[in-house]
Length: 528
Image (cartoon, rainbow, N blue to C red; front, side):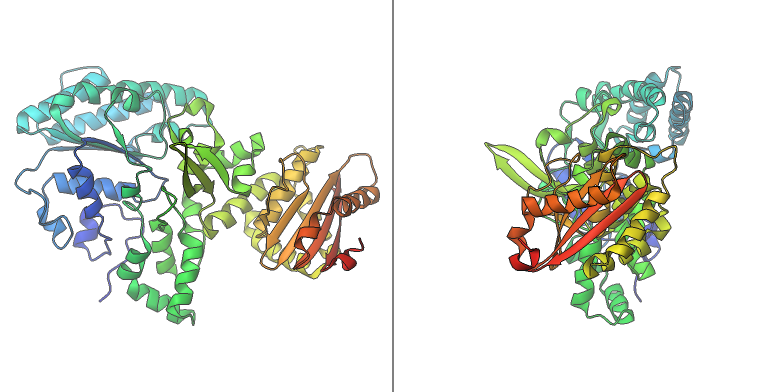
């Protein structure tokens, strides 16, 4: 009998006692604890298995030996030395106001104290937390293990609300400061989060904290490797392959395209657990993780700043891009990386300093993220986007300028008049997103910046050379002629005439749009 799929289940105990699949990560856990450090931090996007990892550590340090039978760590752990565990999950802590955050943390301290039959006498929140740690250690005779899940949630939830963010940040600073002062009473600390924020004292006060986010030894501590996918889910792979009349290798290739591609070292490519489990349960390819994890503020930040380069093609950054940063002055590249929309595609060393190439991890993220960005610019309904995209792909390949023009009008028609932007850059950005959403990749260094398009796009065996023009006063026909003439004059297509080339000119004048398509396959056909 095949084991059940633990979609959305974050309890290690529940997985191990109720017949769910558990992909054994205890070898990574054993190595981490055995390495000698006692304070660890791991950053991963939401719904990437962090809470299950924390739950596993809780069971391990609590000495629940029966849950680990058959796992790597079972015969390597000293089960005779359990430790009291303080496990703080910020997913269950109110944070809508600073007062709510403070009260909820105080309630948490009270509940843990009651569980351990101790009395808290202090009145201030940080003092209460320090007293809790000390009294649990003294009453049990054992140092305390502190596990903090989603330590940054009270910050992440308010990136668009600076006042609440700053107030919550102040409370967390004082709360986390306690951990260093309580060092004599603590055996092990493990914190997870989405981002590595400065100014919260976790990283400034805990000088010996070991950040394993980019450590190649822990790249798959939460996610699934290819080997794990094929081993633990073999029965489900067979079922889905049979249902879709595919061979096992064909199905695995498609799963790779959709759900793997995440990497924190540029070498090991791993699967998003939530999407993988959801795929096997539903037996169809869809954007499972994106639906549950995409914050609206992220889309709005990219649109407001018009910073689309990171989602249009890979970007190169230094190691400093992953260090702590101020949430009140956030940069879109580390934000996209830490929230899971960019991942490490390649890691190189320049004069001993790591350099990273970041890009969109897989088809699930590419397709869904770009469609939502197109929606942000055009207000065209996301639920109707797939059909529109499919139609436009066919129209470009067929050279059907009239039908393509009509669909472009549909996009523009959904922009409310109050939001309609009389700005060339706005149309360039929308067009860039649209072409990327259609599955075309920017080729070479032709695109020099977002504010001006002289773009070469490639998809399969087709190359599209495009030029977009906007002017509020010129006639649409003259703009279209200028766009096509510019393509021909600059001769971008010449390097691609060994394959099918489509010349695309697009002209915008307010909400009026016209386009022209010209297919060429040789210099003679180009008429040049």
